[in-house]
Image 1 (cartoon, rainbow over the protein chains, first blue to last red):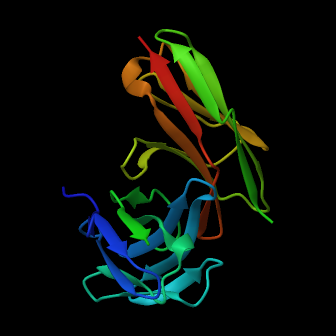
Image 2 (tube, rainbow over the protein chains, first blue to last red; image 1 turned 180 degrees about the vertical axis):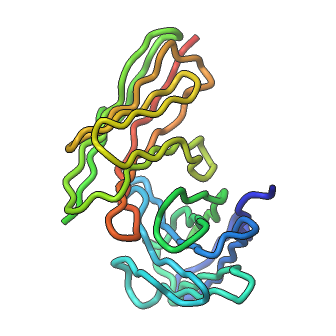
Length: 113
Length: 108
């Protein structure tokens, strides 16, 4: 059974640009959550999608947004990139809404110059 | 505000030297406590879920326990391949709040 996949694995952008990251959950999983991981703050929850609806949102500015498609694949977008957005962005999938047994992808390493 | 604190931040063990990692939490209405392992450059790998005080779960050399205020991850006779960062997270409602992790290094 294939795991969670994320593309691209690495990205380099400059300040002010925008970026879109993609996540394909484990087959049959309908919930996708996104996290930002930095050395200083650790793993921080961004948002959760279930059945194409955002169910929960973390404490991040409106520059961070996401969506989920009917096949449960999800994308997150960050607009007007700042240096502080450099991080590992992780996607996790689970069978249903809620956090029970989330399975993580390998992440997308975003570097903002 | 929900808080999760892991200690120690880093731990160095000799192969075969057993020890425990701590995860203390302050939350209202714990629905579950999760342990993950993360290797450098990779996403966290799910290890255990604990739901109620007194619950224990084991997997190979790892054993997780839960009380009303903290969880322990006991590592028995560790091997170098157990080197990783171990993360705990608490579930309140439907989101996970993570601790900052314990970086474990096991030397041969």
